[in-house]
Length: 216
Image (spheres, rainbow, N blue to C red):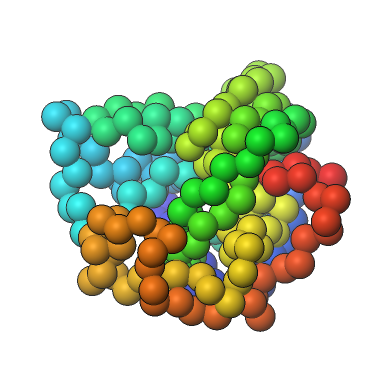
């Protein structure tokens, strides 16, 4: 099964994905879809045995939600080893819910496979608690801090039709990073990047009481 990221204007990116029952989860077809999601992320993580990136000129994919590739179900894949070169820690989360967020906020640069040239500094909770099922239907709980927490919030947002551009303090100043300038972007502090693109028409205004990453 070959998966292709949806275009950033595809309305499915703004839809809430359907929850899975355990009986649905245990079907062969559903497990094949999960395998395809894992293959997509693992194939793009691009880590070698010695920790070197094969192609440092393009971004690493460390997570994927079902609707990013047209699978409208509450499934996401996270590589929780984010930031640790040479390692992989792939986890499948079914029907994930972020049930707790810390008050401290971190500001980190984020991108998305559906927005190939757009990056930006998002505001996320530093620590979160995530409850979900694994691919076998067992209940799992993760307490994540730092990059893994930001990744979990990014992917769970996807499943509820929210995008990282919704988290930008000023969507009119998202970072415009053409593919041939990605290596340059990684070498500078994102706050100093001077090339912008306006995504305000695509961003959703979140309620002021909405906590980063939380699912109502």
